[in-house]
Image (cartoon, rainbow, N blue to C red; front, side):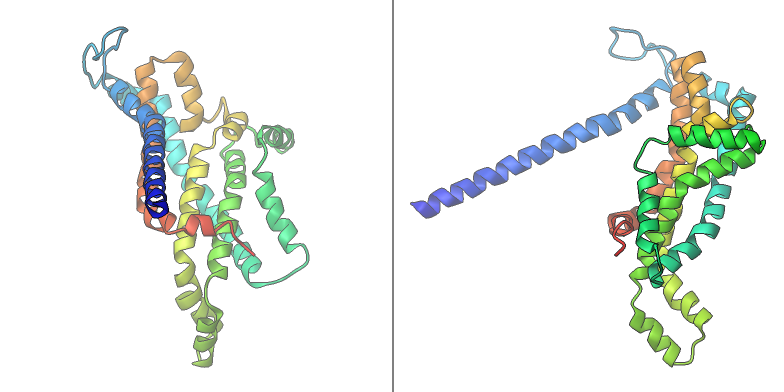
Length: 280
C-alpha cells in the first residue's frame, strides 16, 4: 500500500512539474516571441485599427520609406561600420589580457577581474555622464572615435572573462607534450592553445558585437545630434514616425542579433557562455 502511494505521489509530482514547465515555456514564448510577431505584422500593414482582429491591409510602403530616408540609411551604415571596428579593437586589447589572466598569477589579478565584472553590474548612465565631461575636454563629443571608446567599454567584460576561461580550460599536458616534441612556443600557442580556446573566443566576439551594436545610452549621449546609430535612431522613430516605421527598423535592428546567435548557438548551448564567467 505504501509503495503504491509513493508511486502515485511520484506520478503526481511529475505531472505538476510538466504542467509548470509547459506554463513557463508558454509564458516566455508569449513575451519573447509575441513582440517579434507583432513587429513582423506591423511592418507590413497599412493600418490596424481597434477593434478589428485583422489588419486593414498589407503594404511594402514602410520598407520603401526606410530605403528612401537618407538619415535612416546613414544610421544603419554607422552601426554596421562602427560595431565591427569596436569588436576588433576590443579583441586586440582584451585577448592578450585574457590570456595573461588565465595563465599567470600576479598581484591584484582577482581584484581586477571582479572590478571588470562589477563595473557592468550597475547603471551606466552615471559613468557615461562622467565620461561626457572628459570627452568635452578632449573634443570627442559628436565624433566616431568617442562612440567607439564608449562601445569598447561595454565589450570589455565579454572579451576578457569568456576568453580567459577558454584559455584556462586548455589542458596544460597537451601543450607540454607539444613542447617536448620540439614545437616552439608560438607553434604550441597557435596550433593547440588558440585552436582549443577558439569556441570561447568566438562566443566572446559574438557577445561583444551584440553589446556594441545594441549600445544606446552612451552612444546617444556622445554622438547625438551629429552621429546616429540604429539604437539611437529608434528614439527619433518612436517620437516622430508612424509605428509601422518603428516596426520595420526594429526588425532590421534584430536581424544581426538573430543571425549571430544562430551561428553561435552550438557554443552557447554547449556552455561556453556560462563557463566564461567561472574563472577560478
